[in-house]
Length: 441
Ligand code: ZN
Image 1 (tube, rainbow, N blue to C red):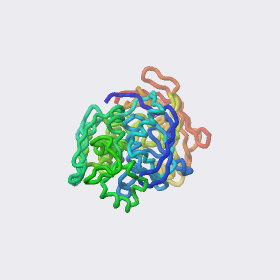
Image 2 (cartoon, protein in one colour):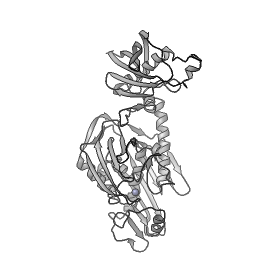
Image 3 (cartoon, rainbow, N blue to C red):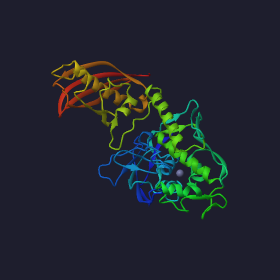
Image 4 (spheres, rainbow, N blue to C red):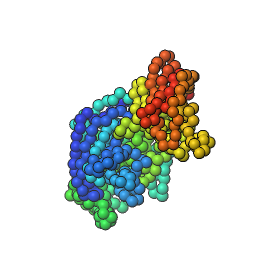
């Protein structure tokens, strides 16, 4: 798949509607966001709700919330995001901030087309960073008794799907598309959600489909076909299944280059495939073959899982909890020093003090983040050649919050001079000058 710039929207816009399942009114407000921030939802109607990414780790149990894709945590939920995610993924919107008021995305006409239209109307613009693409390198599959999904290596994202409802009006349908925004908009986005007439009662008794009607959901009667509505395509249902499948793939959080083949597959095995792909992705990234762009959360913070994508250090030798500032020449990291740190066991029982060399190592790790997060240094290693002018000014004890500040003083060929300072409560506790070299790993 071709490398390309990350994208966001040009203008703020909002949309309101009724949720297909809850029947409740909700409102979405889309805002442009910077490169590497990703897609972020926030419940604007819940004070203090933390931002959440529509990613596989935040997926709610499908058996508890069937027939839709929902994300959330113990404080809040956001239901039925699949059509919106499908549109964002296919229109290649990498970064957008979405405020939602309500528990569920508006269902609109039952397809992803209204989202595509709004995104295009708002305008789409390129950002200065490249998007990260995960290429599937070997066949990966998930199968249960009757449904299957396979990911095969491919230079582009291609989706094939087989729908099979024997003895119904729908029969078997097959469709296959190589995805790009134009094909998606024309062939997939207009396809609306559907169900069989005999499923309606069961769905209603589960409390589902409260916002559904014959206009936003194709209800299929076995003899008469679609009730009080008309198909937009003869094979609209299989196209909608492709749209839903893309919505599930979007939970991967990055772009995928693969040929995905779904045979009667639904949210449950689709998301199992996404989990498998994510495991492979993490393994590949951790082993340092490719280092992705660091992704800041809504407040511009990198946490350990992101930091681990940039530098190779791991517990118990990773001494940075988060990076709160990262610019061309400066990085600020934070380490919350707790009594549970392993080094306090022997340094010293009864009077725990953080070893000065570990404070220096923590500064060096923030220096590593500063150097290796740069576009040209991704996937490389930083080795420290020398450390000079080390001064320890105050003891660091359990309960201290270490602020680790590093600044690039000079960069010549592949050698960097970095000034590091560590603070606790605004007072300097240690400082050092580092010389570091970047090498290909
Ligand atoms: Zn759907």
